[in-house]
Length: 318
Image 1 (cartoon, rainbow, N blue to C red):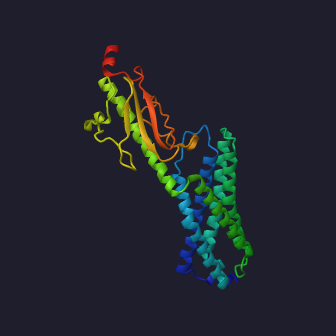
Image 2: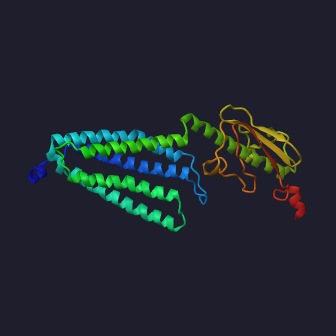
Image 3: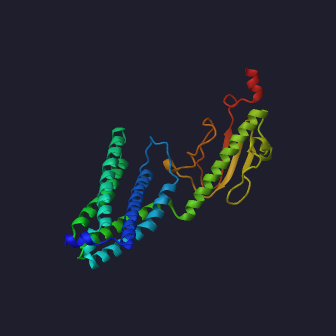
């Protein structure tokens, strides 16, 4: 048998099928681990983390799994069928090399990520999210490692019940992860509404900055948004609502007070999921509380002249 195996040549079809099988396996494994990580971060936020996730990474992982994982199953099916019909192909070099490379990568992944997570653990992250991340790596990388150890030893001429069970279990795990990701993110229409709301908050922050800048330069608040137009400073166009095109509301409510209003599609999230409230602003001294309900929401602001002195006040102080 070994002499027959050594004389079997690798055809272009074999080469590209095995290459496709391993490439789709790596992409699916990485995407699944990343999806588990992002789900964990959203379900169990870390109060010491300053980062936030607007689901862009989760969306990419879900898209990869939806397309690439079924492709991996299809390619694997044809490879196993070909091996049953031509068991002498068990020893072709492309199969052996890619199998051992996969075992090596899976083993290194387990070791490296466990070292990283233990380092995080020693840094004080003694939380459920830590345990879940460790578990997700062990499940994904460990399952891949175990399956390919079995793949090296099995009789390829016989239909493998264990291989079929592994594919079913892995499909159920991926499907469960996809459902969980969709439940966390919401529908595509909800995602679009959230992006519109993020843009609205960003526009209001920009207008707020321009109002404060106007006050510091002229010593008084603008009576309307048109007074903020200044092409020389790069603010020649007042932003409008990105969805409806209507103008944002501005009202001068006192010598040092003003109000900004906008129509929001959704209620802002609380905690670490609130990407709006954690969006960077132009000055950290500005009140950056942008939590909002759905519908029309107004934000009342008051300028502290000691923090934002007008130019004439600065000259008097000097």
